[in-house]
Length: 279
Image (cartoon, rainbow, N blue to C red; front, side, top):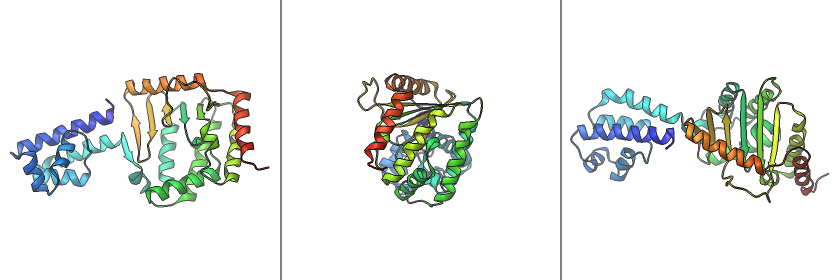
């Protein structure tokens, strides 16, 4: 069970305890709140995370307003492991990039696998700009696109810091994913080919025809074997449980075995570049 799941279940148990102390059944409590009974059940069993407004209503209905600071503190702890994109992007794209920079700066060694896109630390400004346009449009959030692009490019200075190591694995499909105009993708592939000369960077490509022992279902980052970050369509997950980190390390190792590096990786990039049909 992940830290996030454990925290959510623990919070639900605490809320169930408060509801029980009020003497109300789950159904009666839901009626008092004006909620479906299923919502109370899902929160109490950890199947649904409450919002701050839910906690405020719950504490009031249970006659336990004095414990609200405790409940909101538990929720903040939970949210350090799960943060929706809509909530994060409310502060803007630049703020999100600065948060990433803070996490990266605290790590000496970083591993990043991407299944569908080029890693952020290796993106051109044009590619990053189109990524942010797609993301903010999907989540209907504030669009400080140019500030976000500048912040992402500034993050890339870390690649040239002595004593640090960056390991990138990219599924070949990401080289052929036409999410953006062909000229943007061409420039991005040229930039990717140029990373082979950066001494702090190791880059591998997992070919589409490779024999795999694991399924590359999504991208992920590992920071000094202390933190794994995963981006889903709706949220970002921060995993600190050692069992989960070990699982991602195993997936990384298996993908590494299937990957190619050096001239072979360069040829795959060149092939994807040629397939764009541009000079």
